[in-house]
Image (cartoon, rainbow, N blue to C red; front, side, top):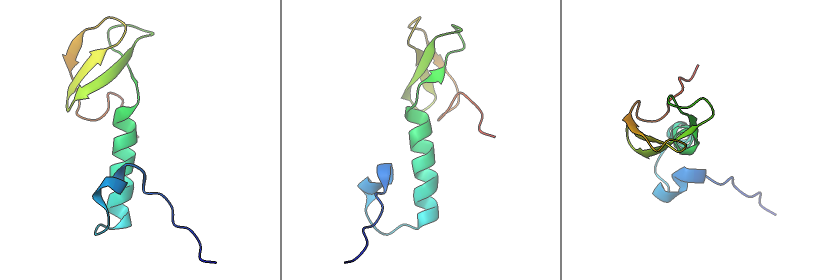
Length: 75
């Protein structure tokens, strides 16, 4: 039997025609931006991404601007 291929996660919506390097970078950014980030307004609060560079603190409800994909710098 033939082996099954891996799922392409969030990049699957684009279909074929792109390299694996592009797929991996896109999936990495996509999963990072959808996670809850630590809020700068409340120590235990979480911030959720509304749009590119627009964030909302879930605990306090404040809307603020920040980096496009993640509030935490990737090392």
